[in-house]
Image (cartoon, rainbow, N blue to C red; front, side, top):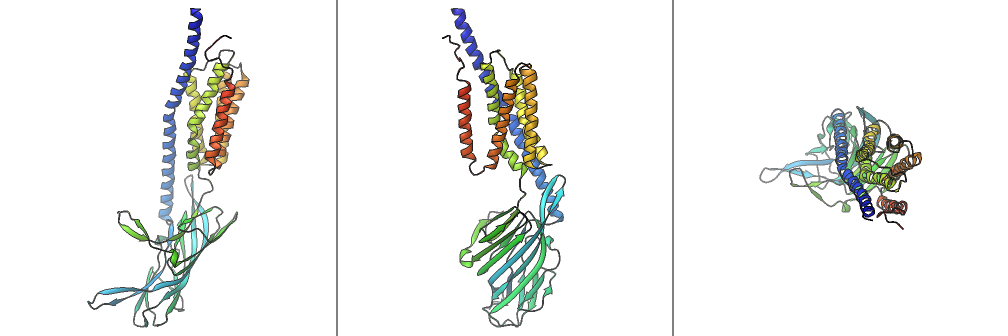
Length: 417
């Protein structure tokens, strides 16, 4: 009787020891998961460096600012005073032609934009015949100019200007001074257009199928097809209250309101891999639980050594390294499928030939199918960003229910009926 109690106690201790071993092994494998995060961050930095090098020879992300018109006078103290004409009706039309530039294995969307700015300024100063009127064109990166901008003021013939600041005598007393500016400019990744008039109408269109509309306002109208997009913003001045934010030095500065279009690469493999890695620990635990259940339910009294658990965990984690490297060369979805199949093949072979010694092909197929279903489930979660929490909660509930079902007949205390 005492020997039987000791045997039962020993069996209980063995199961608990194995379970604790699995938990410790899983926790230790968090270290390489953190290492994977570091690799992803390193590759992102490498990609950003590639973008920076392209920007050096092309141009940065562009901001098309509002034009301004002003003249200077002297006050009673002989000090110069700048008098700004108020921008009244303001319309900007931007037509983007995109292309892909490569730096090593990285692809960066760049563009050449045809920009037309037109409208009028309000003249509340009367006769401007003896005034030197200064017109300014504002862009973020002037290196992007393809050729000299063309400028028309007060219906005069277009002139090509050599600088973003142009000074001339208008010789007019009109209350409304029309203008038109035309130029081509290059940039990459995104383009912003600032609002600043009493009435603002901005149109941005281009040959890109995956634009992201950002900025301070969403378009009032937009159309996106498989080949191009067209978006329009109409914003009155009453909606343009001062926007104050901190600059790099911590000082408060006034910044313009903008409409923005970002040229997204359809799938960012690094962000998708980063998201899939969040499920890595859950994949490890569920895989280990599968082998543990096999141990406690196996009639052949099979045992999986802690070293073998470590090797299985390494096989699971190598999936993410494969995913990062392969997705840099091909589409993410295809890279995910290839990486998953490689890992599943490795685990099937190791389980069948090493762990079960060719004695249980059913379990080898079963555990491989389980891992395949988990990969499929996590892939679906990657696609369902908005309801990922709901889908994840339901999935975990089903997994726990399955564990309860498969362990329903386990005699945890080794009691005889």
